[in-house]
Every structure is written in structure tokens, then in C-alpha cells.
Length: 220
Image 1 (cartoon, rainbow, N blue to C red):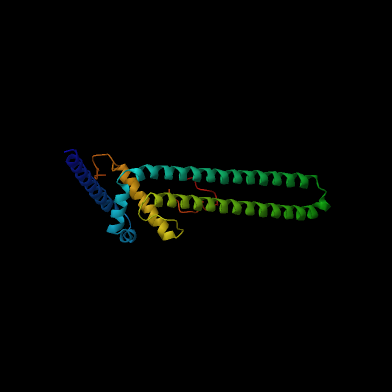
Image 2 (image 1 turned 120 degrees about the vertical axis):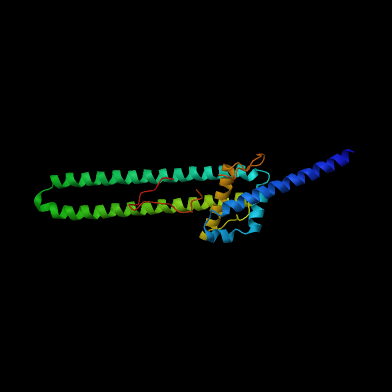
């Protein structure tokens, strides 16, 4: 009798899982229609079905917010580092400008041309140093973001999320960003495991720093 009851429970569990999978798959198919047509073509029925299977137990829904939060904190930290470097360079330029003005005021007229040549050389050397430090910072930012993206890809791949693996291909990265967006929207619509209603009524910065036209970092 107990074995019979257990078998019935297993069948019931299997049926609930199938229904849950169908609900998630239907929700994903609905959300995919909001994406550009080029990405809709990449997200086949099989890919969406595999993604729905990965979402069944709710683990991925718990992983994704943490992954995105860590990325946001890293982006904010890197932005602040570059901002501090820019402030240091601004102070350096101001100090050099004041030093040159004071030297010119104290200089005798006949020595002024020689002083100005020397000051120009010093200014060029400082600007070169600033340029190199900014380039080094930008390289650091890009490498750090690349590393973080690879960590995220590996984490989601290990969690069995369809479409995720370590890659730097821009098209694949954009596809993965869209998959993350689908998962995030499912969360917003109440599709996590254990919730009765799907409610269908309703970063992953590419690995590159973003700056405005003047070269200032844009906050994340």
C-alpha cells in the first residue's frame, strides 16, 4: 500500500514538474517576442525548453540576482577608481600651471623665452604621463570586466543554464545578456519556483568601459 501511495506521489510530482515546465516555456516564448528579430531566431524551441528545465527548481532564480549585484558593485568600484585618477590628474595640472605662472612672474624678461621652452617640455612630459596612466587604468577596467563576465558565464554554465559558456564573442555575449534579461523578467512576473501564478500580464555590461565624449567615465 505504501509503495502504491509512493508511486502515485511520484506520478503527481512528475505531472507537476511537466506543468511547471510548460508554464515556464510558455512564459519564455512570450517574452522572446519582445526581443529583436535577430535574437528571436537564435533562441530556438530547444534552447528555450532547456532554459525552462534549468529554471524548474528555482536555483537559477537565486543565482542570477547575486551575479548581477556582484557585477554592479565591481563596475561601481572601477568607476570610482577612474574618477579618483581623474581628480589626481586635475590637481596635478593645476599645481603645474600655478608653478609655471609663479616662475614666469619671478623671471627676468630676457630669460623668459628659455623658461617657457623648459616649461613646455615639462608640460608635455606631464601630459604624456597622464595619458599613459589613463590608458593603463582603462586596460585594467576592461580586463577586470572581462574576468567578471567569464566568472558569470562559468557560474551559469555550471548551473545548467542553456546558452551560457565562457566566450568573448560579441554576438554570443549579447545573446547571453538577452537570456539574463529573460530570466530577470520571469522573476519580475512571479515565475520563481513555488509561486502559483505566472502573471503573464505584465548590467551584463559588455566587457568594456563606457565614457562620455570628453573621456569621463559614465557611472553604472
